[in-house]
Image 1: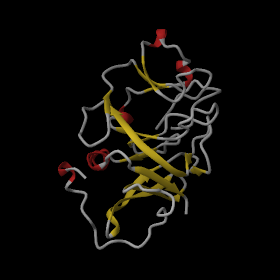
Image 2 (image 1 turned 180 degrees about the horizontal axis):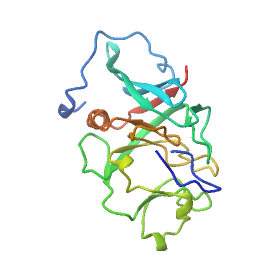
Image 3 (image 1 turned 45 degrees about the vertical axis):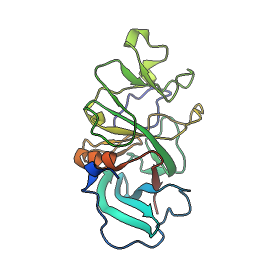
Length: 220
């Protein structure tokens, strides 16, 4: 995604309705993330293929083990590739395992198990002001009345956020640790730290996601 660049700019950046997510074969052997996702049964795996490009594989765990539901989905990550950790002002996608707790978008809720907020106008923001208690959270306010620095924040009423899932990066809101990391609709370009895919693919994944799902990111 594209962001406003400021001195302290933020670093970014199965239901019946999801029948298209079907097993691609038998249960897989232990995937690369198997020892890092705890009890999670739904995993969006993001693996770098170089630069700002990556692929996504979708996995479901059952009593039989891990099963790939979709593989090789073309994906864009940060313009600076991937990094070991998130940092404000650095357009790299942080590696690791992150929760997928909620979603939002300018389009209506496509369905699925995550709570969804529809962005219905210009007053929806993701605060990137690490001097504010609002840091790294969604806020709804008119620009002139927002209790945080909007120049260091993201307005969410943009095409890349037709649909987006919030990645649990820097959940403890550490200043300088980045904010506004999303799994969102691609515009065909590198992001400022987010993970971006074709909107139809994203909608299908959102319909499948339930609370407890995670995104696992690596450059291996």
